Image 1 (cartoon, rainbow, N blue to C red):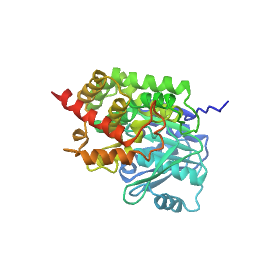
Image 2 (cartoon, rainbow, N blue to C red):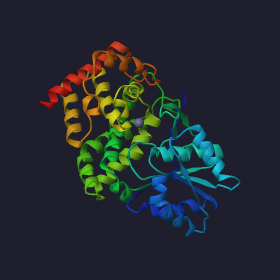
Image 3 (cartoon, rainbow, N blue to C red):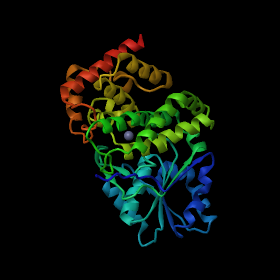
Image 4 (spheres, rainbow, N blue to C red):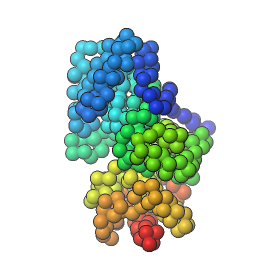
Length: 364
Ligand SMILES: [Zn+2]
C-alpha cells in the first residue's frame, strides 16, 4: 500500500490579541529569535514584537525584507545576520514576508513561526515558499521539510487590514474543497507526494461551508474593523483549513489556471485569491457542472465582492485568441491530472468561454 502523509503546523493560535503570546511561545526555542518582515510591517509592529520577546528575557533581532522574495534577497537576509546566532525565525506580515522567513529558516536550519497580519492566502500554514525573480515572475515553489512550528493569527490585526486582503483569502480558500475532490477523483498527488487524505477532504469541505455560511458577515465585520465570531470562523477557514486542505488534499484545475492567468494581460495583476475565485468557476465549467450551480457561485461572488468574469478580474474585452492562449499556458501546470477527466487546451478554452457567457447572464 502507498503511504499517506498528513502535515500540519505544530501549533495554531488565533484570536484578538493573539500576538501578545509571541514571547511566551518563542521562549522555549532559545534566546535569540530573528524577526523578518517588510519595511511597512517592521515600522508598524517591530517595537511591539521586540518588546514582547524582551519581556520573556529574549534578545530579538529585526531583519527587513527589501523588494521581491528572490534567492539573492534571502542570501542578503542571511548576510545581515552575520555571526549572530538565531534560535528561531519569526515571519511577520503578508505572504511575502512569511515566505522570506521560511526561506531564511531553511538556510539556517531553524524552526519558523508565522505571524500573518493579513489573511490573504494560506501561506502562514503551509510548508510552501513561493520564489520570484527580479521581474516579479514566480520561478519555483520551494518546500520546507516541515510546516511552521507556530502559526500566530491575531484577528484584531486582520480586522484592521483592508478588506481586499480578506476577500483574497476567501478566494484562495473557497476552491480547496473542489481541488481536493478533483485530486481524489483524478490520479494526482498532494504536495507531500501522496494521494489525498480523507481528513483533508473533510477539512476542505468545512472550509467551503464556513465561507458560504459566514463569508458575508465576516467581510462586513472587516469593513467595520470589528472582530466577530463570523470573522474568526472565516479567518480560520482562509488561513488554517485552506492550508491543511491543499497540502493534504491536493490542488486541481483552479490553481493550475494561475499558470495561464499570470501571463495574461491585466488579469496577471489581480491578487492571487481573486484569480483563484474566478479559476474555480472555470474548474466547475470544465467538470460540466450545471449552469444553475455556476450561476449560484457567481451570485455569491458578486454579493461578497469577488470577480466572476475576466473583466471583473481586470481584463476588459478578452479576445478569442487571448482565451486560447491562457488555456495553452495553463497546460504546463503540475496539477492537471488532479481532475475527474483529461484536460486539453480546447476543453479548457471552452470552459473559460462558458464562464464568461454565464457571467454575462448572471449580471442581467
Ligand atoms: Zn493559493
